[in-house]
Image (cartoon, one colour):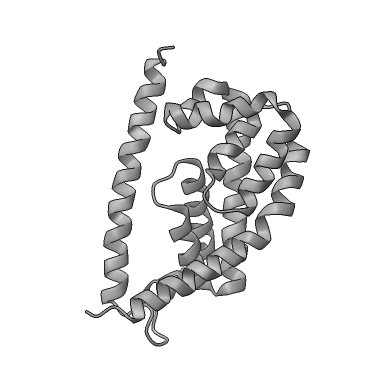
Length: 204
C-alpha cells in the first residue's frame, strides 16, 4: 500500500533533522573533550546552566521533552548530560520529568491524530513490525513494559503505538511509572561513567 505524501515528507524531514542532530552531537562531544569538561571541578556547560538559575533546569527539561517528541539528538546523550551537569539525583529528576512529559505528549498525539501521524516517525518496516501488536492487547502491555525496562527498543515510538490502542491513559502511566524510573537511572549512570572513562583515557 502506497504511503501518503505527507507521511513520506514528514518522515524524510525527521530523518534529515536526526542526521543533523547526530552531527551536532559528534561536534559537541569533541568540544566537550577539548574543553576539559570531565577534568576537575570547572565544568563550562554546568556553570552556564547554573548562571541561568531556575531557567537552567527548565531549559534542560524542555530540550529533553523535544528530543522525545521530535528526536534531534540521541536521547541517551541528553540523559548523560543531565547526569553530569546536575549530578546523579537532580540529573535523574530533570531527565525523568522531561521524558515523562514527552512520552505523555507522544501518547496523546497518536490518540488524537492516528496512524498517519505515527507512521511519519519511523520507517515502514519498523511501523509494520510493532503495529501488529495492536491486535494483541495483553501482549502489547507486556511489550511496552519490557521496552521501558530493557535497552534497544524504540520507547518513544511505542508510546505513540500505545496511543493507537484501547489502552487507557491511566494504565499507560502506571506501566510507565513502574517500569521506567529505575532502569532510566541505572542506564544513565552506566552510560555516564562509561563515557567519562573513555574521555579520560583517550590517547590524544
